[in-house]
Length: 114
Length: 113
Image (tube, rainbow over all chains, first blue to last red; front, side, top):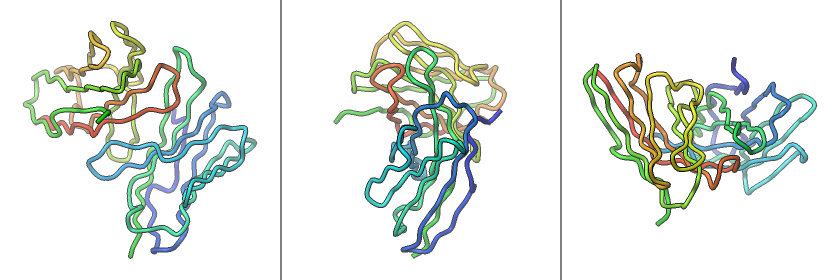
């Protein structure tokens, strides 16, 4: 049972365009929603994260939009650049303690054409 | 430089052999994790450890074993019982169990033929 569903699987955007990646979750106990960026042959790196008490968080060209009622969250990359070409993973977790773990989506391969 | 190191970057083994993947961190983090990544499958948790001499199974622990004898080290052994061992293996750490931010190593690509 996949608890975090991510779409699309792949995305091609022109330089300067907006990239949008969507995720949906089922577990209402999730309270932390990070996005990771992974370049080929490298480990993922935390890009941006949001808690469910806010509807939007922006860091530079990257914005997370969060819709708690719909149990959905999305990553928007404004003014996409070829250097943004990577695989993006959304994830979700419940609050700390011994049962804590991150549940990842299956990833979106973003290609930004020059 | 602080961070997580995994070695080697590429590893080749014959079917039926056990193989151990190294993970070392100098971030002074209590918690460490092992994930497996397959194309189109995201990251799946194999094992995690909250503290030295303690570890728990993740979602896909069958065919794997770990140890946590030192805070900075969390080696993963892929045993011959693992039916599909070829994958990209990622080690991660966080300040403590329950800390939201996980930091990943560069990964080891294991190929078993």
